[in-house]
Amino acid sequence: MTSVPERRPDHLTLALPKGRIMDDAIALLSQAGLPLTRPEASRALRHEFPGVTVLELRNQDVPVYVDLGVADAGIVGKDVLLEAGRPVYEPVDLHFAECRLSLIREIGASGPVARVGTKYPRAARAYLEERGIPAEVVKLSGNIELAALTGLADAVIDLVQTGGTLRANHLEEVDVLFHSSARLIVNRAALKLRRERLRPLIARLRELTAPADSGLT
Ligand SMILES: Nc1ncnc2c1ncn2[C@@H]1O[C@H](COP(=O)(O)OP(=O)(O)OP(=O)(O)O)[C@@H](O)[C@H]1O
Ligand SMILES: O=P(O)(O)OC[C@H]1O[C@H](OP(=O)(O)OP(=O)(O)O)[C@H](O)[C@@H]1O
Image (cartoon, rainbow, N blue to C red; front, side):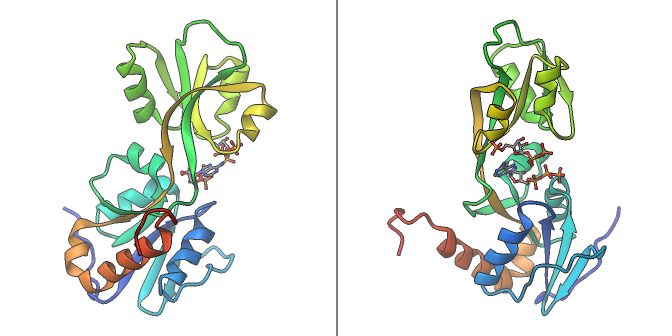
């Protein structure tokens, strides 16, 4: 079995995704008291700060690094977290990168849905099975909406935020599978081993991101 190298209990290793989550994640973690700055544009993938290492990953790999204990904690979208199916602790909804995972078709499409294109095959299968729709699910990697436009699929399951992509491509949202936002995720063993670093971080992030009308003070 592969062992994870031992690290000092007062050192934190964080898994953060490159892409649209990175800047907000660094800003929020800084506000919460971690001495982080946006990593310089370079090919470096591991960034060292006082008492904190940041691993710069693809979104889908964040839950893997946290679950396997290489990172103590990470930030990732709920969409990616559900798809990963990793048993990590998810203590804080950070309320940014808000979007929804939806079933999308060409405007006016009414035929049966026999094939669905998506980056989220697990969520797509669960959704279709629940409704008894025996559709084939085709895993795609990006620009998912093109699958519906080109006839590769009868529908796609993809993220919607402003709806701008749908409008620009003559597509419509037929159903919403779930709403997503960025989440703090934590390795369960690290929560015990690095309690003194992680507990205050979790508490501070909860304070910073609590919805204004939650009644919390
Ligand atoms: N248009 C959007 N508006 C708001 N949040 C979004 C939007 N698109 C994606 N997200 C959220 O931000 C996360 C990261 O999106 P991003 O576009 O950076 O990933 P990606 O480039 O598609 O992923 P990767 O290349 O790592 O597979 C998504 O998992 C989702 O939770
Ligand atoms: O409703 P909207 O505001 O238009 O946002 C939705 C779009 O944003 C995301 O794509 P992204 O720009 O990340 O590109 P991708 O398809 O390559 O992931 C998502 O996959 C949609 O295509």
